[in-house]
Image (cartoon, rainbow, N blue to C red; front, side, top):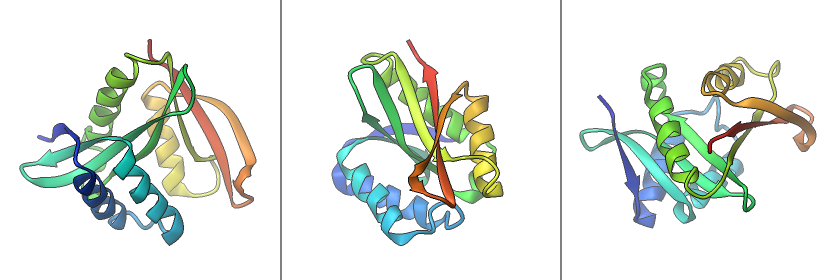
Length: 153
């Protein structure tokens, strides 16, 4: 059973992000974007999911306004998908963010482009997120951004 812990040391945040994202090229296959997620994790609040000392996944939290926090990145190693780890990480992040803001958002690729992201969208909707808008100009024409939002307090 996965244990969730907040990670406070920058080098540990960078290490878990790099290890987990390397296992997920279907979602994080653009090297520059992947590196940006890794570097951002070093500066954000991060929680990791572990089995013993082995990292299974992580989630990072940023604040986008005084009323809204954002899941900057959520990633679970492929072999551990559909075991409740992502849900546990989202719950921990919601508890922390809910002490400061009313809303949580996440950006992902809009449905209909890639089966992997269709599964991602289904996951977030199962967590109670609702589609706020699709921004085709935010990333690029092959990766229309969908913004999902959830009231957390």
